[in-house]
Image 1 (tube, helix red, strand yellow):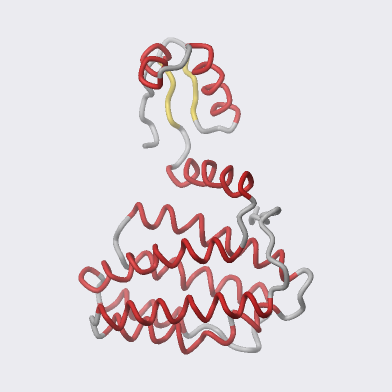
Image 2 (tube, one colour):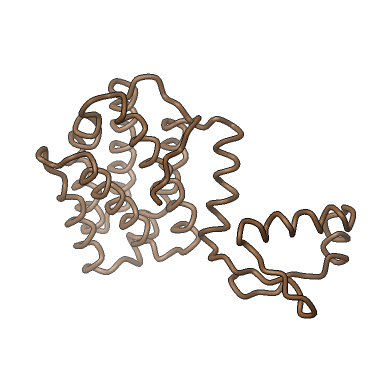
Length: 218
């Protein structure tokens, strides 16, 4: 976690069964990315938030494997199912009410950026009601990547947000309503229905998927 001191280079080399120069280069690279800070005489310390470390690692995978929007949605479904299942037991009525409010923020008159912001808010709120910080950290990256890839699609497909995010209003509200009823079976069904229809809309409206470029918000 942030502020933690890393083991010595010798200890890391022994643990990972690599040479000391390899560890030294890895630490230099992490330092260049502002992930760790080398304090002479004191050691090496984590200075990035856990979310930044997660983002750095997962971005490398996305770029290396040319991950596309549909692949992101496939993995996201698993996280949403787990988050919603946990939320049935731990989410407060007020939190579920906020989720339902977020689900109702989609209107046909929204511009592309408003659609993107509303979708990001809804998805992050859905995961947050699980009270599971690990799920939140992983999902945050996937959600931001999904939004970035959708923004890329929007540059070549007019009105893509209205064609994909717009038609799913009823499915988003169904998730919130099932959570409000504390009905785990209906929550599971609502998530699966939402994601299945979302993938279908992506296939029909997003053109050829691409994972080559991820547009991240500055």
